[in-house]
Structures are given as structure tokens and as C-alpha cells.
Length: 81
Image 1 (spheres, rainbow, N blue to C red):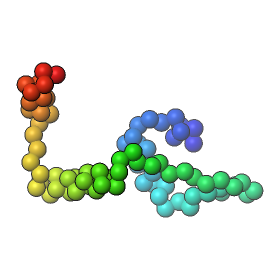
Image 2 (image 1 turned 120 degrees about the vertical axis):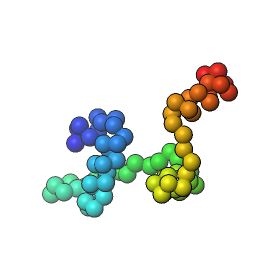
Image 3 (image 1 turned 30 degrees about the vertical axis):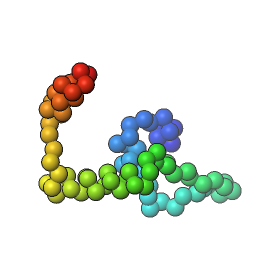
Image 4 (image 1 turned 180 degrees about the vertical axis):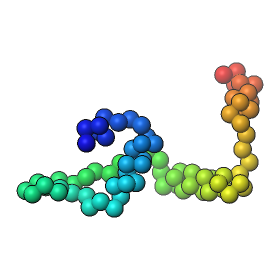
């Protein structure tokens, strides 16, 4: 538990969260009483929906993408960053 609490690897935490989704939240020790707190997203429901829709389009090949190098070049040319 302490390793999970100390972990800052978002991918790993997401995998752990997926594994624990079907586990009954709450105490498993006799006489203990507590609830497991879920993580709340800092993104709005609309933002999460947009991300989900774009991800589905990307996975289907319906989304036009470019390489990171091309993107960085465009940003540098436009903003000098």
C-alpha cells in the first residue's frame, strides 16, 4: 500500500486502478471501518468526452496526425519557442 501511495507513475496507477475496479471498496479487516477514495479528474466531463472521442478517431485512423518533430518545428516557427 505504501508503494502505491508513494507512486507518481500515472500509467502504473491507472493499471492498478483498473485491477481494483471490481474489488469491493471498504475495510476488509474485522472491526475496521473506512472507505477507499477515488481519484477525481481535474478535467471537466466535456473535456474527458472530447479526449475519448479523439482517441477513438485516432485508433480508427480517422484523425490526421503529424510527428512530434513537425509539431515542434511549427511551434518554433510560429512562437520562437
